[in-house]
Image (cartoon, rainbow, N blue to C red; front, side, top):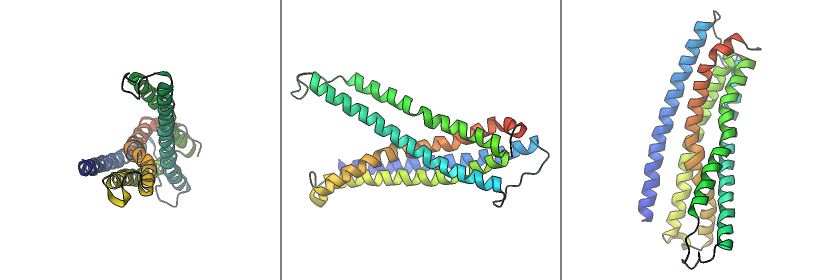
Length: 235
């Protein structure tokens, strides 16, 4: 069973790799589309060289956006998980007979907490992916947005691959130890692996896959608001 679980994690990582690659190719196509759309709306030729300060600042903003977004999604998992821990403790304390298998726990309340927590905690990351490209465009102009898209695409791809593979490796390491290696369950190695898997699961199941959405969402928002950015920008 552990071998099958590990194989499943490897297969899932492969599938996520294809998803990450497709998201990156989509972002590249959207980036080219954004440049073409902007170029048709302005008579000036866009200077997209790395020596252009606007382009360079946009690259840094895009690179940092990936890490801030990943931190927010990781924190969202921690907050939702902690609410489940509190709810489970409450049920053990207030509902008699759960440990003796005489009474069923209130599963619906835990599911509701997960659903509400996920929706609530993802509001800020979603707004970040929408607001940042608009503000960047209004301040730095379309050249800054091109830099932003480039930074998000490059760092987002690298972070998504890293998180998906590292998370799967942590999970497989825990299952490998639970199969009897390095002392098996209850050993110090197993305790360390469990701690690692608490990071690995949100890595491979939340933050890594969500970066695909970030890459495509930022590009789509930039295209939608390209006319506004061209008409009204400070620099």
